[in-house]
Image (cartoon, rainbow, N blue to C red; front, side, top):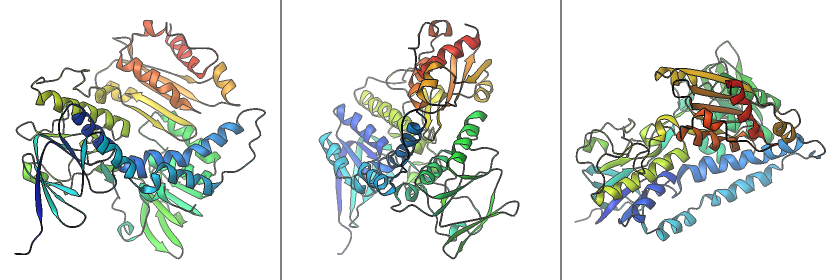
Length: 476
């Protein structure tokens, strides 16, 4: 009888999704002595390594470095970016889209790498369809962990589905600088890629539905980033909605509300991402495909009996950030090991088995020029949570910033819980402010009282002096 050959294997843990998040969950489980399979349908290393964090920053960093040099008196930086060299360097950071190095790491960490697309078939059971069409039946003694990430969302704009467009994958892996690039969406991907390609020589139009880019961040963040984009020649269309997309000779046309029309060689659709939960067989364990996976702080998926299904990263619908997903994955791996040993029931907040930081201390950097670095809650979010807040906001104007760059322009704000006198949110905008972020993250995670934070003396002359000015403005 002819048919598909099926092999069957059992592991302690099966992790579905071999990106940065899955690697961390699997690595922690294996480190704890559990036999672990890592299933990946594409490249081991995932989106971050090949189409997101690494290549995007490789495209952004040369332009930021050149701009920074031009802001220092006495430094001659008259050259333009060498686009071919920037793209070649980007290719190096992606290992030319070859995952052999990542596979070597995984196998060296004791993981069994399984190539193919996995579907749940029942409790602790999966079928993996391999690239050659065969099937592998995998069973997990203790846990299955879903780390399948997220996928781009294309809005229901007439004509968009029939028009060839870029997503973040094409935007970070293109091998030629487009003459004209239209970017739909003013979020992180939109502003970062608009600036990267503008500095490499493209004529970029950024189409933003709101009154500023980065609308989820404090107003001054989007305003300062918009100024930076305009300085690089980006044409920003605010309060503009795409009403129709069509293919035209030589490119793509976007019809905007108000009658304007943008024509470009390529259109990057950067209008958000959603958890990638379709095609995983969730219906076989009582869950709804296409929906985010609701988890507790140890990563256990709600609605599944038996305590065997876990998830981490974008697939949960929590903060869609690589570093945060990796953090959650480390917690998941350690929690699985502890439960396999009978050492864990309900984890305590801030323990190694609870991803408590998701609730109040998520850090994020937007790698534009100026950079945006934020952690914790905005004032509005804190107030919705019932926190009595006070906001202190001021320009970054200290000796350190003056030395750092000519005409340094930046702004900082902190959100204070007035009842506990601790920070619940901090935002910095300005050149190179990303390096200020971890101090703010520690202050929030550690719930450092402002009276004690006052004694954390910033070195002179550094940009960190802004901490002193914020605390002085608060009244200390």
